[in-house]
Image (cartoon, rainbow, N blue to C red; front, side, top):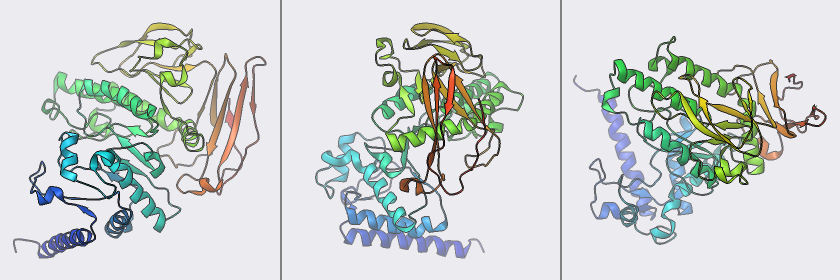
Length: 442
């Protein structure tokens, strides 16, 4: 009468199954169990052990478990939260290595940091073995060089909901992507919330709203655009009412992100086919300008957009540098400014300073609410003149691997400054379901 008997049976059956799975993997030598043998406790007070992803057969066994219990239920993506491995949170690396002991490849100090890479490899190869044409996506808390090979992106973990944490995300993301890993993101709004924000009123509530608005303004220009965190809830309508500047700003940048999808998806195509990087530290594009070498709070999003986040409460302007290789257009007003100067740019509550590089092509689509939404409306091609420029509009089937077989299309746009002429080339390539005709507003 007091307990749900069926639920209790289900829980104990799952517990037994998990215990048996552990024993099966242990018997085959696939478990790194030094932590358990020495009776160490994790931060929640439990003994735990991890499997050895460096062992090719262990990866296959791990995939069998998550395929049977998770993937076959119909999921579309993976969130790999504890891929450090998390044998005990917040311990120094040398202690973690000691807890793990030797792996299939030998001493942990040789290969420890590649744990998340091998874990992602096992899931990637496993899913493609049973569902070869469904595009894989993984979000993983830790990463290692080459992680993009296994359809994995990394986020910066359980960061705080504070202004200094927002500020720190900018160089963190740039260091990550400049290390050759193209897909990175942070929890928009921060994850761990100070108590003062939980049931905030008055000035504290207004600070919470502005923090989220500024973080959204930055997050729109990260390779992945996603909000996540503890209470208070992060949906736009939970942050502020519709007539509030925070709500208006978040909505504006949300729409901007989705309008820019042709540009963004083309950058993703460049990332796969031509080893491109979407989120770019300024030295990547302006290495002849020595003034950019130590700028940690500005970056390029693709070849066209200079992003200048605001990371201080009640700040309504910010100092920024315009690289000297070309001029710059204000995205909102189209005002043209010469490069090679430091300016104090307006930064209203609802907007951060955004500039477009002289000699850029920005491809935008109609307002959509999700990435695969179809629309017959024309694309708009914005040409920022002053220098010759080219841009390749990339399209494919979005959710499968046919692009690996050549099923994708490109349309080349070239602008010639001398003749003031934009040339649109014939489409190259094709794919199933491709829109036969394209209309462009120039």
